[in-house]
Image (tube, rainbow over all chains, first blue to last red):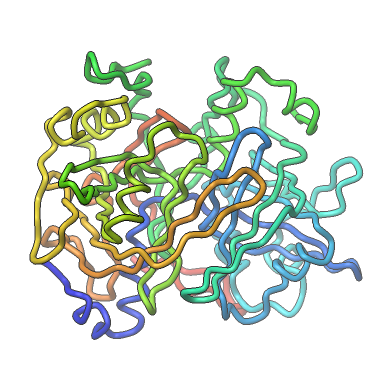
Length: 208
Length: 208
């Protein structure tokens, strides 16, 4: 089937939101932990998390324009610190539940555990097996719909033992890290294999 | 294990690149198809593809700062048109192979097939089951490392029959769409389930 631009605009709103959200493919849900200046912790579920660079180590997160109270973004801008915690299968329901409209801290509400490390003020999520502490660097405004891209520099990594390969590849699958489609569909994964760095002379070989 | 900022900076370069690339979690490889003004087609493999908005329908792609010849970005800026094609398991090796440094068009080099639709000048990839035609809207420069975020508006969708649910959810898993970790690790997926919209009164229920 083919949909034209006017077909897409004519779709029922919820239908279109679901469809367009699926086109970016599989992504991993990440919980972002923050703490306000007044000391209230917050935990938010984000899927638009991206690799921006390795030197310096940078990650990006997209924030929707009108997503009602934006405690996560406000706390990041106020304190400059936040954590990104990969979501695994064992914590799937609790992670999804953080996206309800809670009056209290999502840690208290969902039962996920705040974990603190060294002099980092933002809370990590104890149940996560791959935890990243970041410092805010810059924000960019996408003019087309007022979405905000936040760039942070990685300051610390907390990784469960046994996941890191000799060449630096991190086996997030062995940590039961989830993959998502769209807004609500959760998936686990199987390794097909790693492919060698591509060169013109031969089709890519399996590394494993 | 915990790595501090100085630990991370002290890692061997290739090791650090692999590790940092894995932290954004699973993502789907996408092939971007373009054609230069002089008529030469190009196909590039990108994993940092994101959902930006549904109304208007917008997607973003991150372009690394120094990735040698950037034909894809140059063609997009020159012609304002490009296609994003989700990569499935059957075309995995060919898609990975497009990232070698080809002198000729990656279509010709890898054997993937250029497909044209209506008055869209940029080539789609026939072997893909989910194909998106886009028009360039804006580019943003990330100051921290000169990465470029390109925003495009979706103009047309070509989707294999049987993948679209009644509520608009697109079953990219049924299309054998791949998930990737880092630079070279390919995975397929199994559905765990869909979770209902989160509300405070009850933990999220399974939809399926």
